[in-house]
Every structure is written in structure tokens, then in C-alpha cells.
Length: 152
Length: 108
Image (cartoon, rainbow over all chains, first blue to last red; front, side, top):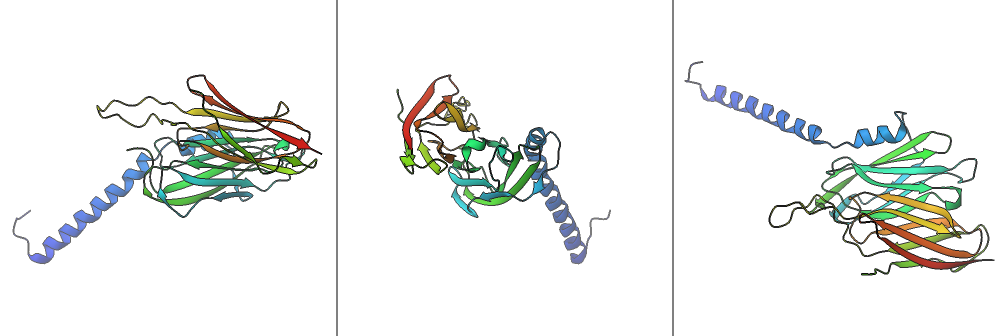
């Protein structure tokens, strides 16, 4: 290629290179994603989880990722015939996906639990509930994190 | 060092079938194993990895904690009051030790 570009060509070339750079960088977080999908697959045994019944209560914006309050509740009568057995919570961009697993039984009365978690950066928190009949329900919520909480 | 967990039941006495809410806070570093010290060496993981709650010896709630649980873990959950007895909360440390706390519930 001849080295003498006019201004327009130079700009076009620059823009092209920029867009390539942007595309390149956007694919990096996708690769850096942790094993959240695998963790969910392992939990459900490959079954698809339906949306609904699970309520995930998290702040929209967490100023301090070191301690983010989370409440998970599942709509269930919690009787011996129909109850929630386990709820898995994962965060898809923490160094490790697993956050917590709650174990319920009919003696729990209500399938609801609250704790405080660490989030490294802005990401989705996903809860998957396992029912005693073998069905799965899920919900997810994005939390914007201002200061990450993994001591990096 | 014995750590004393702080446990609170929303009621000390309940009618059979009532839902009782438990809130508990325990002091623990919950070292995630992801951090490095000033020399750049990774700090080994040390967390409470499991929590259980039994009422009269029957498990009503449990949780498996991962390093993503905050330091000084707080947990809140509920159970259905069936009979009077001790409500025992146990946290299991990575090093094999346990932190145990107990409250009494009276069911009328």
C-alpha cells in the first residue's frame, strides 16, 4: 500500500482499526466468564430451569461489593407434598461462580433466606431453586458494583 | 478463641405452626483464598463453609457457604414452630472447628 493517504482515508482506516479493537476487547469478558453455567448445569443435572417463582432481592447498585445484601425467596407452600429442597446462588463474574446453596425442608415453613455476599464487579446474580418434584425455577438480577469486593 | 455468635429469634414463644424468623451474625474473616499478602503470596482460604440449624435435633435449614460470602457472615431464615426445644445453630470452619450457638423456643 502506498504511504500517502489523504485525510479521509486515514480517518476511515483509523475508525476501522478502532472498531476491531472494540470488538476484540468485548469478546474478552465473555471468555473470562467463570464457571457459572457449569455450576448451574451440575445443580440441575442438565435440566432447563423455568423463569418464575423465585424472587431475588438485591440492590440495583452496590457501593461496596464486599457486603451486598441478598434475599432469596421461593413461592412454595412448603408442605411435605410440595416444597423447595435447595436454592443455588451463583455470580457470573466473580473469580468463582459459587456463592451459596440454601437447603430447605418442609420444616423451614417458608423458603426464604437472607445473607450478605461479595461481588467482584458489576455482574448478574442468578438463583436456581430445586423443587421436591424435580423441577427447577430460576431468576437473575444484575447488580452494579462501584467498589469490587474480592480484595483485588 | 471462642467466638460467640449473636442470634436473635423474632419470638421466644410461638403457637404451633407459627413461622419463627432467625437472624444470626458470627465473627469470622472468611478469607477467600483469592487475596495476596504484601509479598505477593496468596493468603490461604479460611472460611466457614457450612451452616446448619436444628430445632430439637431436627434440621430445619442449612446453607453451604462459598468464599463469596462476606466477612462476619450474616444469615437470616425462617422455620415453622412445631415443638419446644433448643434451636442450635452451627457453623463449620475449613479447619475443622465449629462455632455453635443456641437459643430456646417455646411452643404453646
